[in-house]
Length: 206
Ligand code: C5P
Image (cartoon, rainbow, N blue to C red; front, side):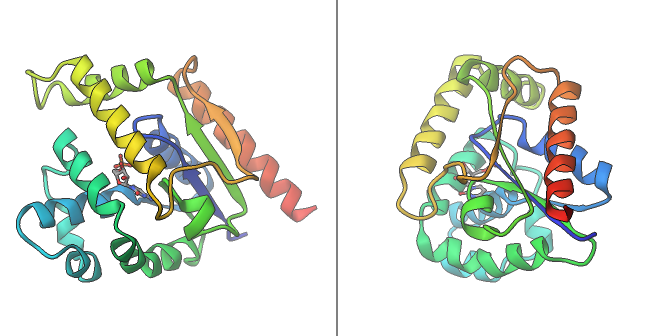
């Protein structure tokens, strides 16, 4: 059965880890849509036109080594507020969502704008402090000078911009399953996401 899993939520809530695990469990393709905005943000920081960068994004642009940094996240969030940039990325994401064999996409607007017909929608959250701690642990090897407080400030700024923008703001779809991972281990969070997916798919069949 072909189906789409849409995963949304604020920065560093665990969407990527959960998305990859759910994709593997059900044999679906996986797309981290944040990477599209990060790549556009990096191209714009290098002088490119935002809409042109989004329209002509190439596979190799997504492989740049610097896309995971906090700066790349901020640059992504600035270009992501531009409606024309978002519009240029819609077709690629929708085609991916409906590909043969099914797909998992994670981002901010997957269940609300990109794929409102997704069979499964998850909205993944965690407390600000827990998200900052997780992201700091991820980034500190590459950037030993980074502090947890700086990561927290970065996530809050990005979440505020993402939630307050007019174009496809961050919010849960009315029919999304809410998954708060604050108190959960990775395994427990993945387990809940897999069970929610099975339940939704089962309901769809019934
Ligand atoms: O998910 P990630 O943190 O990599 O996303 C980087 C930024 O890209 C987000 O802060 C958000 O501004 C933007 N984004 C978006 N819509 C998506 C995915 C990411 O606006 N579907």
